Length: 359
Image (cartoon, rainbow, N blue to C red; front, top):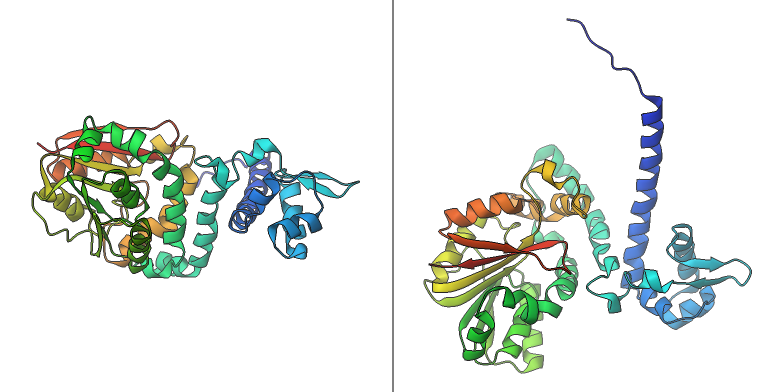
């Protein structure tokens, strides 16, 4: 057998080496960006005139030596401006517009936390590459917190006026009073918003995470809501038939152990004429269609390090974050849904919104 040797392209190799070096630098900046978000440094800097590291650390209530080293990374990464004569640092307003909590839903710094979360389970993931299986949900102690913040940017601020409004007449029905179920309710932020806004409706949230349920119940109690309950329950065991007029899932289907069973349970629990509103990742099921996805690499990474692996840990389907519209439509049809519309919101490049009417 003759082996053909492909000519080695030196120009291509050098370009790729430079690209890899850029990836290392940008990956490091992502970690530093997560720290800047969690410590509130970006929020502090946004409110300051050009300041020294001592002044910034004092304003943020942080250790100056760590702040100074972090600032170094931000400066060489061209995220923060530096005046070498005055030794002062300044976060440009144009950068603050994508790095501070006030910038939500455009706060990209919040998403950087997914990178650091991945690092906490890398050893476990490497073992899964070798032996299969998965890393269970319990191994991600901060994931509920980060997901709640993510949802707080993309879902909560526009829930009533934009997301619920995607289903014609739904807001009016909620005003009059209907039965609502949120499957995989997380920390309950969306459900608490709805329960407070629509006091005539009755709301139930189910979630497998005790941490999430506790957070939801705590917020409901603080708000004094009496039309809302949270239950610790597997999403695959809804256990109801034609009991709800609206069922919602926010970024909750693709990482289920048995997503097909969850969708069938939702179809069974929904009353005729009821609405199923599903928010999930906006992507294609076909890799070649995701080449220009603005968050493609990040979402495949999140899938590898969380969404796919938590499903596989339970012996599940392991759909992954990028299961895509085509697969979603197929599974919704198999669950019995025939009227499926997919909508996008201008502010949200990450998600699709499925508006599904039950016959």
